[in-house]
Length: 425
Image (cartoon, rainbow, N blue to C red; front, side, top):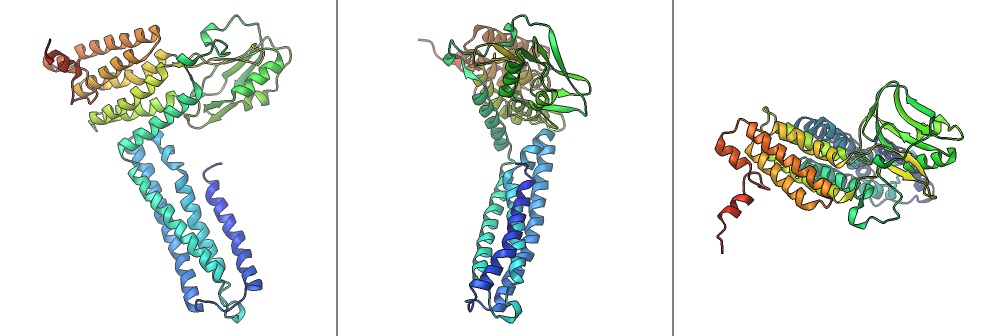
């Protein structure tokens, strides 16, 4: 459901209830009220006017959250807060309380009856309590703007998509139908090509099941030229169909590639890492100069890479139920994840002893954690590259020696130094 639709549904429900419930009360539940007419009118009028002021406060809080996240962390984090369901449910509850209070106010002492719709009084009171609870939750969201909470939210998104997309290497079955894209056999000639035309859009999601079904129906193999997270522009090749016996509908093919204005982490484990790296390198900029925030971002990055390092990343192909190859699509390799996670932080943090020590600790931990020899070798190459970066940095000899120590806190607890000072027996 689009977030903007949530307050619209609240408003529609409140208008319908406001037009029917007080009328039914007046017709079937007319009785002397336990509350005076003047008190009921004052109550409904105060709630209605107060909800308008509260709605303005909600908008102000929303704008503060969006602006702060864009300036302090990354512009790409704006949607993380701007699409917060609590924000839209709060706005909807305030609008519903406002509309229903006004509608009920019209039925107080209707035609001089001296009757107050008592059920609606309690209903407005309940809506008021709900509004206060949602407002409290919304104010609590301000604390979520703390850097630790922001990093954990991004990390949790990354852990979720890794858990859903990849299978553990130690649990991989021999009958697994998914294979690496690098092992795609020779394909027949191209029978159909699909090209994108329009304004730039980002590949947000792929309908893998739908593409496999279409490939099976055509009797061929669909090869995607774009992966999740790619931006497609005018005349960009989207996919090719190889060896198809029957032509597929372009409309059906386009429907399997979900395009949007922004990247999402739904099928893209790279995107949470991208956000964490953005926060880290922004913290390392001369204008901010906050290496501790970069170290906290590396904490989350290391955790995501440790999980990826023990997963089967070769999922760039899909077969149908009969074991016939039907789909091939680009997927990042282990080296791609390492490049994304470490290169920019290493480049921008070369002058920070704290960042270099934390990067080294992360890489050493990865080398001990991953199970595939090729991945261990790739991590070791990054360790050598890190040492070369330290050697070329502007740090003096003593600082370079300190930067080569492992420290999960950046500057706090040196592992290698502890080993050197430990007594021998």
